[in-house]
Picture 1 (cartoon, rainbow, N blue to C red):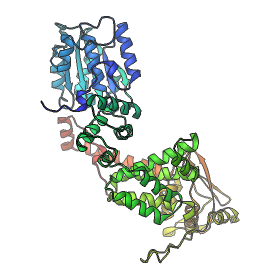
Picture 2: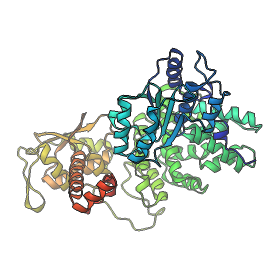
Picture 3: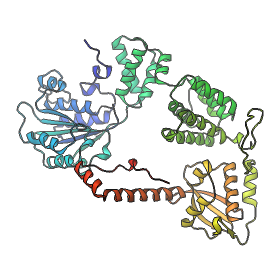
Picture 4: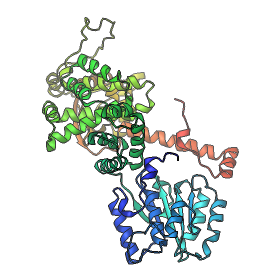
Amino acid sequence: MSYEVLARKYRPALFAEVVGQDHILQALQNSLISGNLHQAFIFSGTRGVGKTTIARILAKALNCHNRGGGSEPCDTCSACEEIKSGHHLEFIEVDAASRTGVDDMRDLLESAVYKPANANYKIYLIDEVHMLSKSSFNALLKTLEEPPPHMIFLMATTELDKVPKTVLSRCLQLNLKAVAQTQIANHMNIILDKEGIQYDPATTQLIAQSAQGSVRDGLTFLDQAIAFGGGKLETSQVKELLGTIDDVYLFELVEHILAGNGEGAHHSLQRILELQVDYQKVIEALIDLMHKLTMTQQLGSEDDDLIRLANSVDGELLQLLYQIAINALEKFSVHPSPYQAVEMCVLRMLAFHPLNESKPQINEKKNPKPQVKNDVSQPPEKKVKEEIKVQKPDKKIKASATNGTAASVESLSISDWAKDFEQLGLNGISYQLFSEFEFKEAIDNKLVLVKPKNFSSPTSALLEEFSDKCKEYFKVRPEIVIEEGSVTKSPSLIKEKIANQNLQSTIEELENQPIISEILKSFDGTIEPDSISTKE
């Protein structure tokens, strides 16, 4: 007999066996008991959380011969057995990913008018319903508007936003949540006990964490771990399989980062990468640890190592490091080198550390390679504040900008700021940071900018660089004032808006071309914005 994977072997057959989703189960069971049944249900949620499983259990309960006034199917009668095996004549399951055309939908609904011969309801289960074409949805909508009393639709999707609102408005929407890590781990513990496999609860917790709320993914990882360990489940082998990092190495790396020790952080990172872990998981582990440290600072913890690290770092710095890691993860997929993506994430954390802000020169003994010197000095934070705030404003501020264009701080406006900002010559982190700030006003030689709420404040080094660039452009150093508030017209948002307008214009031009228009019409297709690349 062939091996049956754990996800199929232990697939729930009753509502009571479903892991999590109590809010969904309660609603369905109450409807079954009262008899107040909607004629179309749509189950949405991420992969592996029980959408089609719950739909099949509901189908069994609807046509079960022995259910009586309860809510659970018996799972033993002929109707339950036939639905379980997929041979029930009145239970029609369709994969919308492979049957997207309108003809398929019409063929499917032809028999809808006929009453079921040996069941209470004729049930249609449409999996991945968002994959249906527009014409198929229109055909389905006609039946949903006035469904026969003997028909019930069960639909499942991982992308609810792609289902037309006209269809959603005629369905009872059931949104399944990601399953809690502890629930997945407990479910795996029960399965391992039944299989007679020895395990450490910490190991199943590790696998459950990698499952990211998906029970099916968790059981798939568990299958792999058992096969990798030769029928055993050992923590060290599971960590190697999942590419996760041992806490000892991770804590050591973060300790060096929080201490501003670049050399120590570099050695710790190399030790981690030598374990051949997934580079992306290194960044994810840093994010997870920064989150735990933040929670420890606010709520406390029973972990001595977390308490020790949390007490050694300022809350604002921790938020900044967390944001750096998040940005690194967002850009990871487009980075040409995964190794450099991880390394730059750590280097940026060190660069923003307060202990490193006052280090303008590199130790030549440790790094003998020639370095490109930065003309912008980086004095301590106290000096920057004095230089920016204490300096008296000039009575009149006029200067010549690039290409001979006259520039004046006091004549700035929101519409002009986006253009002038690009002329300042900022780059790298300073450009990314200040491009998110919105111009508020310029008066009495004060340049007032608004940063988004909960957004990190610029360091003294970045403020100094921005001040110097303003002086070069306006020929006078303005006083920089940073306020916090709602931001809707920052240079970054304006640039993004213009890019979106250009993209939409390009799409419209393409759709108006006769050949492309004919192709789109023939295949009922659309132009995906991600498929269009623009030349700078």
